[in-house]
Image 1 (cartoon, rainbow, N blue to C red):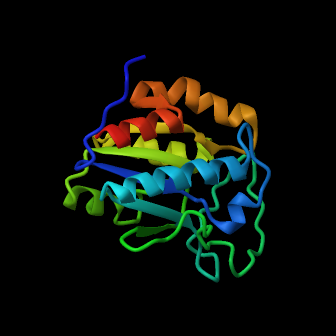
Image 2 (tube, one colour; image 1 turned 180 degrees about the vertical axis):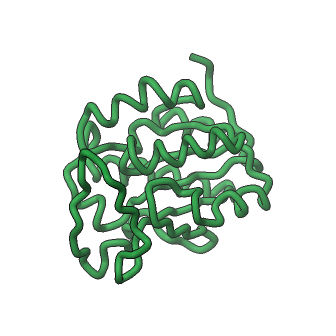
Image 3 (spheres, rainbow, N blue to C red; image 1 turned 135 degrees about the vertical axis):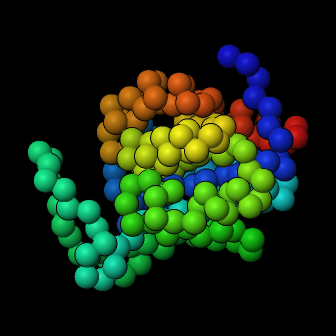
Length: 193
């Protein structure tokens, strides 16, 4: 595996769904606390280099009509959310200069201005982290791949609702569309840039 290097003038951090309602759930193989700690370290390093940090959150309208309701074998439960469900956890931000992206489905590109904001800043590479590895992160990654972005996946700054759900994209999908690294390796590349 080659040593990671990054151009911080063309690289952004995209943090997926580290919000109060999601981090409160049980996740694996890394705990929410570990994911938040590692994502916060990445966000602080990116900010220190003047590189953009995009904080993505998911929510729906009060009437729920913007949520998707497909006919499916595994029906997603409909539930009421606490008023602070979509608030980004304070350890992550937002901090001055961060970009907040609000999405209404799994991926962060569809129906948002994420691509526009990345392109206008000359971003060619995104570092992805967050919860859930196989839902929000993977959906965003697949769109990013199709849009031609280079990608780095912070494996220990993401988690899913089971170890198996985390392992599948990390071992099968992400290596085909980007580079999978640990937070420490990414921080070393950021600090060396």
